[in-house]
Image 1 (cartoon, rainbow, N blue to C red):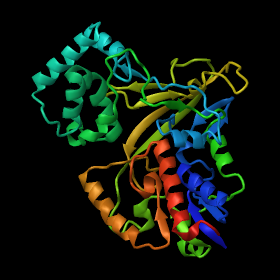
Image 2: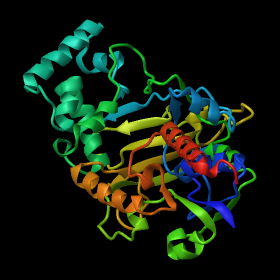
Image 3: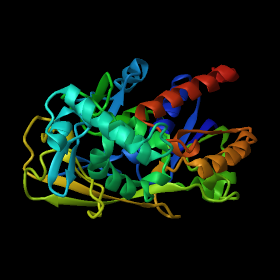
Image 4: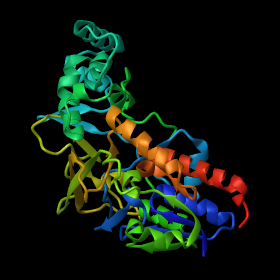
Length: 377
């Protein structure tokens, strides 16, 4: 009945479905949840676009991806400038001269660099072997203890010396007063929310919601020549080799009868004692205004609690340590034997993807499928 069955209506599934449809193929998209857009799903509450599954800020240096997403949304000029709260002390993130001045009282970049180098040398770390050593070598022991250690252990549920060094390498450290977290040429939030953007991506494509593909895989496979699967790769194979590990996130969302709770979109709580990792105030992703530019009298906040994933939870962050990477490779070998199934996206590839990387990977996969003799239906 269809050329392609796409399992999952998140960014990867929507992008592939759009491209294949635009090249004349018949596509059916099915989605386990009751809504499209995957983890970038947003819904309106008192005029505020609430990010149900946590904050998502689109940022990219990929001009082709930026051009592509602008077909479906207008992006505002939101710049991600989170704040760190350590026991009531507030610090700038990413780590920059405001942070270094607040921690050490230094005023010039040379003073800050000297302080970091002194602490790095004092630690005796030459080749960082884990996250703790990598962090200390980047910013010194003082900042590590106040702004990294507690937050990271809450987020990953493991001591920092048991986490791989590469996790912290994405963290920007700047000897300037630049508060922009991302080193990206393009950045912003879709005006009207991500759900509106994904709706436009799926215009003219058949979508069925509330469908559990794995519960009746045989039935759905018969409907299409090829399946594009964006769910967890281990679930596809019924966990026959064991569970891949994830970190999950639980959200406590509140509507507050006040115009301003914390004055910023994101505040990270970096001490170990505060149970949540951060508080998101959703209205500040769109400058506290509705689409007509009116001030919003109420606000919505979400506290985020990180936890170990267990069956039934939403998987968020792959735990790409040595053990899980080895297990994924075994599942990947099984996946390569599935001739008519493509595994893609964050869960299908067990890989941490930023949104622009998801879209880039989906565009590349669509091109590959079209070039394999599928360019015409």
